[in-house]
Length: 124
Image (cartoon, rainbow, N blue to C red; front, side):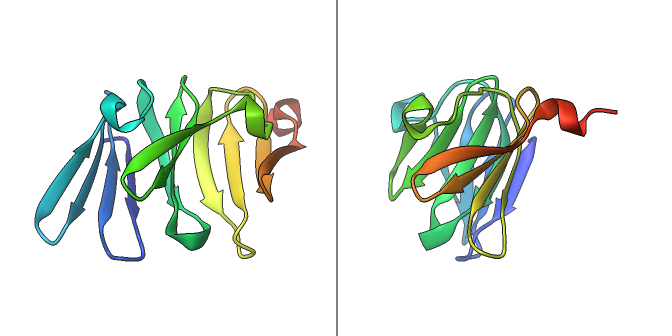
């Protein structure tokens, strides 16, 4: 396990280094994989956004959002161009923030990602 998140329904989302994602609630576990729309690679970060959507970042293989029973890939069509996701966070306004290893910090504003901090600004 490399990522854990408790959602608003008190279920636990579990990300693994094999790219699998598991959801545990009320003693039952649901397994998600590529056939459910997930990427391959490490599920490195998980958070819950507006409307209870679950966001999962993959180190080396993009971003996915859970819609009911299937994952949708999020990428260049929404202004997000980096595959190296290291962290996810939803701020007090409900905006999704994405920390990356190679391109800095992004914010999801409406339906588009905007880079807020360049990666070089965070290096010492």
